Length: 322
Image (tube, rainbow, N blue to C red):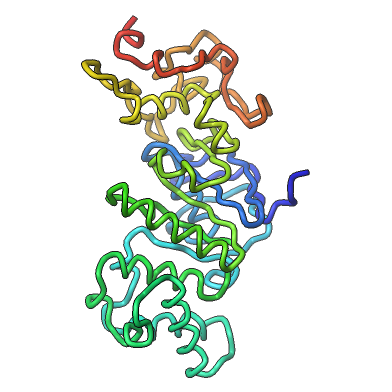
C-alpha cells in the first residue's frame, strides 16, 4: 500500500503574459522519498520547483493546487538547496552566522544555542573542524565546502521537504555523485522528502525513488526510477535515455533526439513531442495525450504500447530520417 502523499500538486498551471510554461501538471511527493524531476531545458522543471517554494518570478499567473501550501513556512517546513552555492551565501557574514540566523528565523532560541546548532549542522555535512570553520567567510571555503554549507543551511531546521534545483550542474561525475550522496544522507538524517530537479538522466540512477519526466510543461512519464530507466514507456523518455553517452557504439554516431523543444508560445497541435517523435501518427498531431495509468506508472502518450524494447534504435540518425 502506497503511503499517503506528503505534498500533492494538482492541475498546476504557470503562465507569463498569457503564455503557459507549465500546463496542468499533477504529481505527489511521498514522505521520505526522493522524487527526481527531469527533462530538457525549458521543460518547466525549475518553475515547478519554485512553485512548491512560493518563489515564482513576479508576474507569474498560477492556478491549480499545491496541498498543503508550505510556501509560508519556507526555511522551516520546506527548504531550497540552490544551484549556485557562492551566490546563495552572503559574502560579508561568516558562514556560521548565516546558519545561526536561519535557525533564529524560525525558532526562539538564544544566539548561543543557534550558534551551537550551526556548528552541529556544518559538522553533520562533513565540514572539518566545524567550530573554527563556522567563523570563516564563504570566500575562505572551497567550492565543495560551500556546497556542503548550503545543504547544511537547507536542512538545519529539519524541513519536511527539500527542493534541490539543479544542484549538480557543471560538476564532473565524481563530484556529482558526492553531492547527491550527501543530499541523500541529509534527507535521511532529518526525515525529509527530496524533490531533485535535474536535466541529467544519469544523476537519478541510484539516487532517487521515482522520476517525473517533463516535456513542454507537462508530464511525459512518471514511475519508479529503476523501472523507467530499464524500460521507458514514453518515446520522449526513451529518446533522452538513448542520447546518453553509455549508449554510444564504436564507429557509430550517438543516437540523439532530433530538433528542439517548442517554445511555450509556439506549441504544435496535438502532442508537443510529435514533431520530434519517430512513432508519431495521425492522432499525435491532433490530440494532446492525457497522463493515464499504464504499465505501473503514468504515461502521456497515444502510442506507448508501440514503443519497442530497447528503443534506442528508433533514435539513430538513419531511423529518424527514414
